[in-house]
Length: 154
Image 1: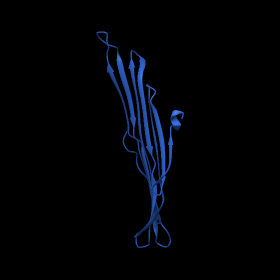
Image 2: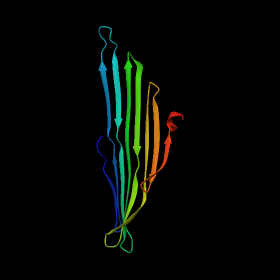
Image 3: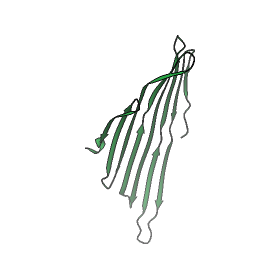
Image 4: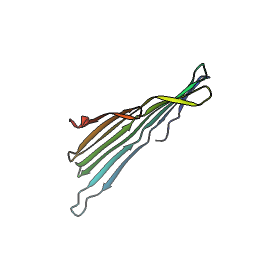
């Protein structure tokens, strides 16, 4: 699936653009059984949804602020079957959500930033019992928290 149409909200004092893009790929690979080899199928689904929110606002004094918020995901689900029995599976998910606001004086000179933050969630598990999850959060360019194992029952 390709990009969706961006949504705009434009006035004399603000410019807002919301972008949504959904990229999905699903596949199935099949190898037929012959000479005592099992019938094998591998299913794979990949998704990369992306959303971007851009907002530029001008204050009455002519100063302005530009806020950007992003959500980017990567997801993989894979399974392998032999003779219609699940032999292996893998799940991988990674999500990042940064945000930042830039400030400008009435002449357009950069004066600073606020609201700088980011979070990342990573998770992977498979049929061998492997499981790993980590959540990171940051503010003003500094790591503020690390949480390990929440999605693995730790």
